[in-house]
Length: 322
Image (tube, rainbow, N blue to C red):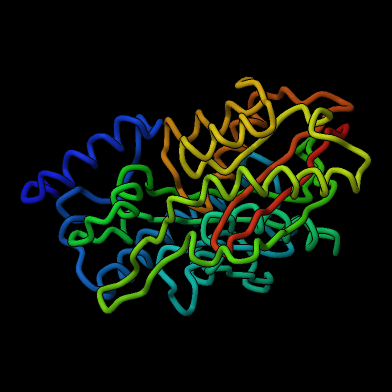
């Protein structure tokens, strides 16, 4: 119905869907509401109301699952690139949750899809101050949908992005995963490859076709340099947790690092079952990986996020006795 008057774009959209690797997605409101979005005012109101509720639920869920006392949490890191509200919805969520109003807040907006990995890295650093940190995210990607944009980038975005929220405790005693190190790398001459173009009616996805080839060229060098600091090579990494930005990107990365599907299937699984949730997605991947409990003593895993900039974000995980 969206593209009924543009048969060429409709055919392209259906083709993208069939090849996306996405089987199921979830949205916070019906399709008719998404198609009726106009301007920023309604989008902002929806994000504040629905997003705050989802964030509260994510916070309480991770506290309960980790048997963590809310008063012992030292900081809340919050990432999103859906709607840039001021104050951010993390402030409202704290007051509606069991967290202390004295908690430190770190809302992050402009990192896009890489925000989840950046949040986890920052949370690990903050937890070294002595208290566990909650790293959280809410992405209502449906609120960025633009009905009148039939560009290739927007068709791809409309085919893979979805809504979701998550929260992860970093620095607590419940997990047997330890963040050994993290690194950011900003690629020169890549600002045009990914991001949002801001027009009067809101945000429009920018996604350049050259993005996968740029990653294939640069990612191995970045990863090898990072691992060398820890006297490791690609072959020393047991498992790989990629941000599932899209099926082509996952395929390119798996091929570039000569990985088996078993080493990185969590990213494919999350893309299939939930779609791309922007900065929230890596929380889903990490949660699925932890639930499978495959990481054994002496083994490690590498998290990789890719976001606007173009930035490549890396985290090295290892198994520790809990």
